[in-house]
Amino acid sequence: MLGTLDDSSILVVVDWAMKFLQMRYREKQSDWFGKRGLSWHVSSVIRRDKSATYTFKSYVHHFDSCTQDWYTVVSIIEDLFKTLKRDQPAV
Image 1 (cartoon, rainbow, N blue to C red):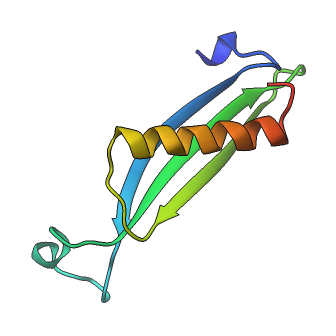
Image 2: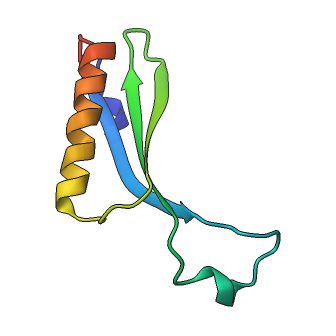
Image 3: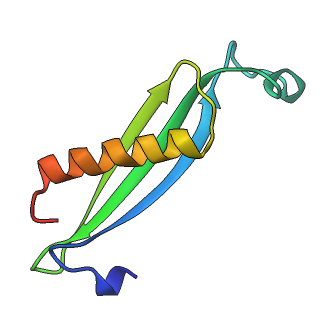
C-alpha cells in the first residue's frame, strides 16, 4: 500500500483508542474495566511526496460521551476529510 502512494493520495488508518480514565497511580486491573471515560478516536494519515519522503500526521477527536457506532465514525471521517482537504488541497 505504501509503495503505491503518490503526491495526490494518502493512506488513512483509523481506530478508537483506549478510554482515558485512570483515577490513581497503579490502579488495579479489576478497578479499570467497566468504567466510563473520555473516548478518543485517532486517525493517522500517511502521505508520500514527490521525493519519496513519507510524512505522518495524526488527528485525534475527543468526546466526553458518545456511542461508538457507525454514525459517529462516519461523522469523524467526514470531519477528517474536510480538514485534510483544507490543509492539503492537492490530495
